[in-house]
Amino acid sequence: MDKLKILVVDDESRMRKLVRDFLVKQDFDVLEAADGEEAVDMFLEVKDIALIVLDVMMPRMDGWEVCREIRKTSQVPIIMLTARGDERDELLGFDLGVDEYISKPFSPKILVARIEAILRRSGIAGNKDVIEAGGIIIDKSAHMVTVDDKSIELSYKEFELLTYFLENQGIALSREKILNSVWNYDYFGDARTVDTHVKKLRSKMGEKGDLIKTIWGLGYKFEVEG
Image (tube, rainbow, N blue to C red; front, side, top):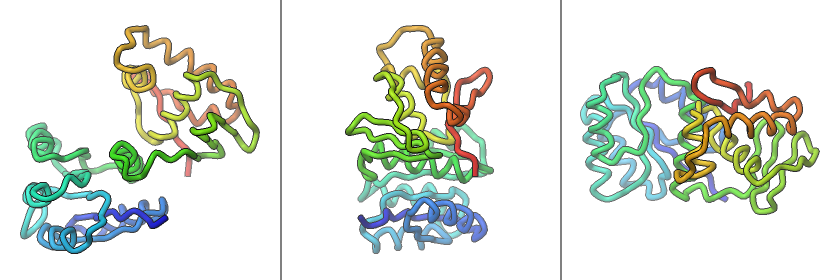
């Protein structure tokens, strides 16, 4: 299968290199543009770009203008990067059809995780039947989990929960968000349900249970070091 192409648009070469290096490690094909006009030209020329990482503040044509131009012909997923923390910018971005909005400085790991999540949601990355991270392998079609090559038995909800963690690795997830995503929006139970399932899941995963980190006052994050 061909690598998915990601277009990274930023006038800072250091920032482009940082993002590119992380994306290449995850087996993406990365294209770069140093300003808005170059980005639009490249997008029109290269027909199979899967997602755009787009800086707001750029010479010649800023990120908003790039977004407007691209949205005239395409609904390609766009992640907007900005040094500003202004809510008005964020609202404008969503009005223009931006899929995700990340303020600088940001963790490249988080950016990559967001990119992968958006590609899965949009169906571009396909719904991979096999997910792997930190020695954990989930085969969704077979409903099987192995940890360090040993099969473990999980309940249906434990399986769904672990899958959700791996698909959103590196992202801090509130208990409410986990409830809504794994138990669905119509679940009115107590958020402690999440804690109970995480506790069981960790015990079944052995040492790898430590990859599910507790974020006090919020929820959990699945993170593989290195």
